[in-house]
Amino acid sequence: MVELKYPIQRRKSRVIKIGKVLIGGGFPIAIQSMTTADTRDVEATVKQINQLYDAGCDIVRISVLNHDAGDKLKEIRQRVDADRPLVADIHFQYKLALEAIEAGFTKIRINPGNIGAEWKVREVTKAAMERYIPIRIGVNSGSLPKDLLEKYGHDDPRAFAESAMREVRILEDMDFQNIVISVKSTNTQTAFWSYQMIAQMCDYPLHVGITEAGTLDTGSIKSSVGIGAILMTGIGDTIRVSLAADPIHEVKVAKQILTSCALRQDGIEVIACPTCGRCQIDMIPLAEAIEKKTRNIKSSLKVAVMGCAVNGPGEAAAADVGIAGGDGQALLIKKGKIVKRFDESMLETALLDEIEAMTGEKVER
Ligand code: SF4
Image 1 (tube, rainbow, N blue to C red):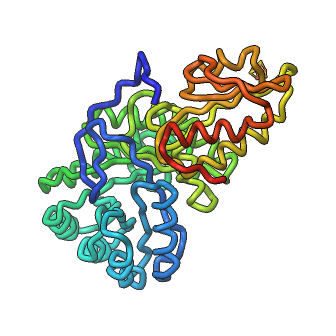
Image 2 (cartoon, protein in one colour):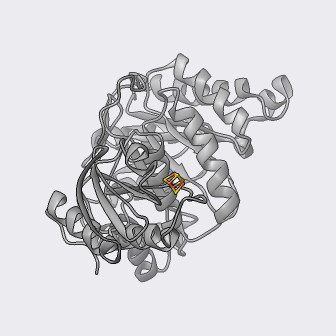
Image 3 (cartoon, rainbow, N blue to C red):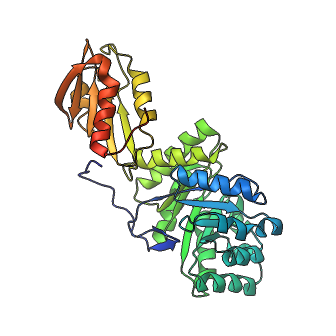
């Protein structure tokens, strides 16, 4: 990863352990997603969990709708590698939370204010404490309590922050501090200020997202703007992109957000020029091919694909390696310096060879 002279100063949050994944305290920002399969269908749920982890997800959450789903938790946990954290998303029913903890789930998402009687909350926190399982308090637009809506009206960041802190205090009063918080609005500005406020009120790690962001295209843009803006203020320990699409896309977009914010880089980041009248090669398919054929590479590397030799070397200076094409000849560039010239027909092969040499990993040919 290219070293930044003025990196974002991340908020100092306390470290929380979610199975083998550590969040907060400056640990890498973790990517979360959620299964969409019916949790009662163990086969489909396990398959989707593994697909999400294989795509680069760090923490997978599954929703536990009712006791039929609760009955399947143990089997799901047993069939997924123990190194892969599993989070149970539960509303209202404290027994389901106990079942998830008993089944070996690594974290639960539940709002204590929704559970009911104090003794029920106590049972859940006691079980979570015994197994060192964190609880995420998740406030979103649809879960704001009536009195706060009356006090502040809809879409007011103060209501989000106050609601979250109210839930936090219930747990803290029971000596429970293994907490993660989210305050997700579907409005990017409300979410932005809600996270700024809650970040000032406590040091618990924050899970950042824009809820109900939308479909693949529009939701990806909205999430990138909303989550990106919050991350750029140094806030955020885990993120989730919420899309009305296959959750694999959530992981891909989340990775891209973190890479675009220069906060984390897993694998190859392709920088491509937009092309212009100086471009004399078929650059766009080339950039797409490089991106596709290097998607399995785990090492972090910035790769530039530039359309011409006029501005290409200069514009590729921020990349570890790159090529610039044009007029029969192509250039191989490293950190902005031309290191090799070769025939233009060899563009793709030369760049892929160089990526393999630099990473020690095989690309997809
Ligand atoms: Fe145009 Fe060359 Fe810049 Fe690409 S690198 S945008 S082709 S000037």
